[in-house]
Length: 282
Image (cartoon, rainbow, N blue to C red; front, side, top):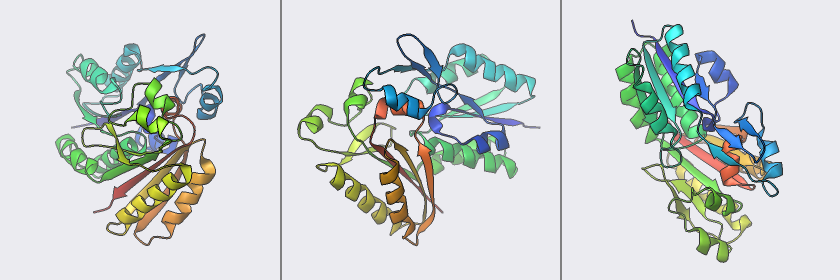
């Protein structure tokens, strides 16, 4: 009989409630300062990261191979026969490839590594839906087959306060950073079908960027019923205001404010970040 485990990374912003409910294994990214290393979301908070960004910007790295190995050892001990790992976009991190390589050393656990082609709540939705399917009695192959279909129903948009940190971290993707900085543009950034950042819309100034992301959301909600998720990086008031606007749309099945983006994501997005995800309901 199949016993299916679920694995993700700390950039998923998965809630503690879901982790406990479904015994989800979460591998933390590393946040590295000159004199100390932290595990994402375990011994450092998002607020602490933002407080040090200007004076002491950290770097980030993958969960260690020993930690990934430890997860698979624990799955063996707990009697799991299968595992589904949902990872941050492979265009943003090497974690997807790292866990694929390590899983090959555990042939007794049949493992599928799913590239979310997303980040944050985009990962969480995939993991949560997989957990619900397993709970409902779906087998491994059935769950695996559904995940790409769920990907197609997820749309993510970001307002970036400054492109400085995306540039520093080499995560600009298809966003034209130098030009945007020079022209004081505040692009609305999205994630393409390959999981890479790109400029969805160009607007000038913070106020216009907030208006634009609201308009983008309204256009989506006017055509589809969606669950809406919002995260922020030092932009709580603006994000809550945006959430209230989306609640006015009758096609918003739910509007969920998730608070701070994970510390590791904050390192790369910088202050002033607002992320909005729309999950189309069938």
